[in-house]
Length: 405
Length: 147
Image 1 (tube, one colour):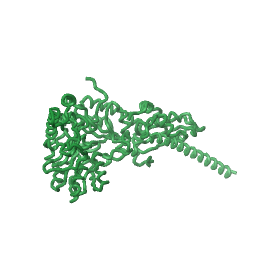
Image 2 (cartoon, each protein chain N blue to C red; image 1 turned 120 degrees about the horizontal axis):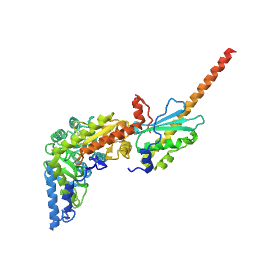
Image 3 (tube, each protein chain N blue to C red; image 1 turned 90 degrees about the vertical axis):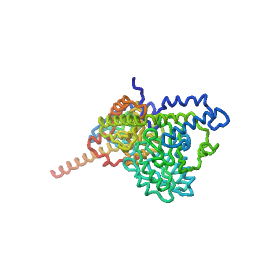
Image 4 (cartoon, helix red, strand yellow; image 1 turned 120 degrees about the vertical axis):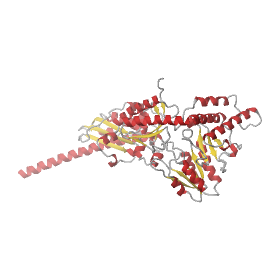
């Protein structure tokens, strides 16, 4: 089969919908279109039945009961609901929240808003591999701490956090534990009971489900309560009003079933492809550096810095491959990735970073094509790079007084 | 982000990539930007005694717009005298390449690179002048001594 271009290697951003998921969803757009909240007729009953079945399946993937699943529009909403909802509900108990620097913006910006409302937030540092030290979490907990929010796996560098160790601490200290589980969900095992997680943000579209649907796991024993962010008809046990997106929920559940059935084999297969990509690139190019963590990493993640070549310029050159970069030029802020900065990657190297995200539909042929393509373009751009020329001449780039602009 | 046609053209086929001998007294080198900011441009101009840019070469570390901006200015400055070359502004560059607002800094950098290269050449010319003067003075003092 000829290779189809461009090749998608941005699975951390989103993933292609699995055709089996689409197939499961289709009837719920047409014949089974009912509102799951309609109690008075068969259209509503059918929709409700599909939703309740989906809830059980989605809960099953993380070791939870369906009753603990609250549907949302996606993980950003789940993060907002978990953090702001818990903060508001438990305000009497305390005003302190603990999180860490490499969290997704949905977590960090929710915390920032709470700070403006008078809460105090501790942002823990991570080590060079992007890991939080559980001892730091324990030290940061005070009698005013109500919530700890630490992600399962990072979206840029794929680092997997020591969730189990942190969960043991938060449970012992009686503090709620929220986990943004978006990136690891369906890729590596995650169990809310084993890890003592109280709240977990989930989304469908990173695991070949549809966009626009997510969930918040809310523990029932011991019961976790939240103040609602969206008021209305009292859907989802009053925690999130709004008519349920039935086809998307059905698709989300199907994606969970598929992920659960193939997780072990897929993690190994995708991990091998990722290793093949890294080996191919580092063998044929010098000055390539891994950002983040080699050992505790999502199987589909590879975040590499190609020294002397600016990330956006490189992405423009490798137009046969869809990837993303931690370079500032890709964001409106003109600041390079805060995640890379937090793990100690200096600014110049952050500007040269490319994030490859491999997943379910990535093939060995694609990986080999990407290696050739990237090697060729990096070499071309290095011929254009004054920094590469200076480095070859033995000039220490750090010794130069660069004018900031 | 979608790139303009002219940016793509210069990016795919950059003009005048290369290196001139920076110790050559007729070559002015401008190195602007910083790796930490994600853009570094090096523009080199060979300028004759009449102040006409005979040759221009560049190398750039940066995004597509930065590479295109530097490639474009190498075309523009060639054959111009240094006064005219020094009058090229970032607005001219940004307009020609249809740069979006977030990429304006690339054109600013290219303008700075021209100015820095000319300034470097002028400094070297002053150096040459000094040398000539010193030589003339020493010849004079030699003549006086002989007399």
